[in-house]
Image (cartoon, rainbow, N blue to C red; front, side):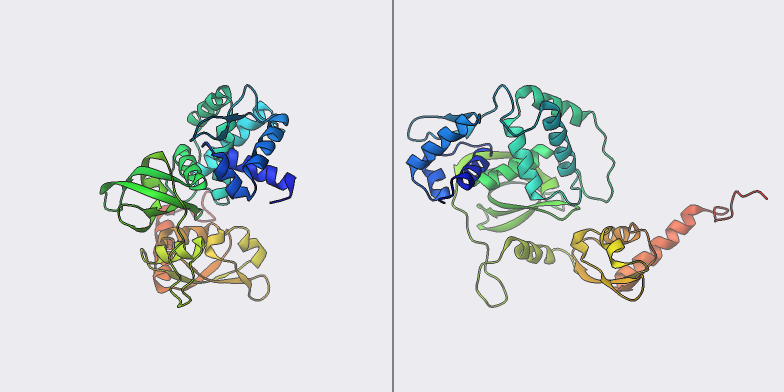
Length: 338
């Protein structure tokens, strides 16, 4: 990497993960010499970034929290506001808060002075968030630990509760965090089982970064006969497909495609125009039947479910229950006086 500004930004991005980087590993990541790394570290220090170096055979570099924020063009109030917002969004798996936001949270909290970290925790603990959907609440510290370990290629230990309630201890090589908008998942290689696994993050407790580094393994080859390693999105889709049935959606909305697309989670697909002021959604989903039905209803317009049959039946049942819940005398004319 010969572009000095780009290399400095990449170096800073690596240093902002909560770990210590040996100079040789940084040189390998950036494809430069150790001497160039030393010069780049000096440049970052001149810019005000508190980079600390440790000596010895296992020494390296890390970015530490200083008396003030590094020059990120953020004052204390802005830094606290961003950290609280990212924590709240990450903890409740709000749509649009993806893995990049969790990595940003891990980096920001790594360089926050202690006085600001205390303020962030106090605000978070004093806040009650109202969320939609049935996604489980997740401790943001768990997410940042997993994200930091995946970025730093550091082995993890944690306790895991399976769907039937069984508690196990796991040691893994974390690969990626995946957000579906409803839940967070960790893709990792399980060292004891010698195979790839996908873990629900809300079932992970006591995550601990061991400090042991690893070389990332390639994902399993595609099953389409190509023999090529799969990417994270396709592998996650295949992993989830084996856990629950896929719903092949066919839904017609009585509203323009742009209106509906802005109110649907991206994981449910993109509707296509279908006549004047109407659109149709044909896609597949691995989410639960109940969650899909609720998300369709939350779009806020008339819609007709044409498939699959189990979704049609569930929407009919849900509609009947909601009508009964309204009770007698609560129709449009109830409570009017002439």
